[in-house]
Image (tube, rainbow, N blue to C red; front, side, top):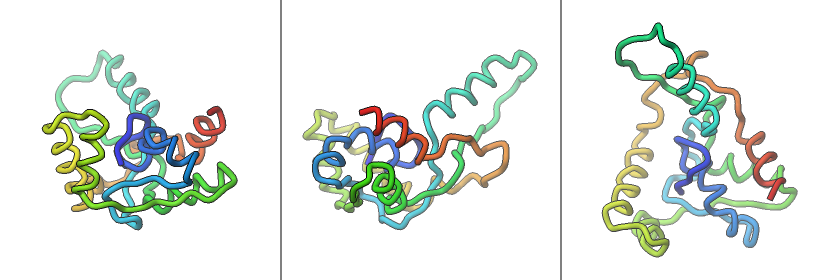
Length: 155
């Protein structure tokens, strides 16, 4: 699952991207194992960290700035939280990488973009999202539950 609203965990952003499926059928789809935990982060937290560094005139150089959100969650965890927030069952269903790619193409993505998304999901399954250690500086405040309460309840 891929989304625009939360990163880097694909299930989080996909919650908004797949809102129709979640609302209608109580299911969201993706190619990652349901129990694979990875950092979750709201885009607003990424924006806040970026703004901090962009506005800091004293900072110079190049550095990685991990933005990991407050907790690591799996797709199954996301489904459980959405179920609690929405007050009805939501489940995650894993699909093959081929089916995931086909869905991207059906939604109008180019061949190159669809393949790039498959490659990214393969890297995520291999653990790329857990490359940076969780530190207080890399931990941001917005929980997935908070995001769901704000985004889904408003819909």
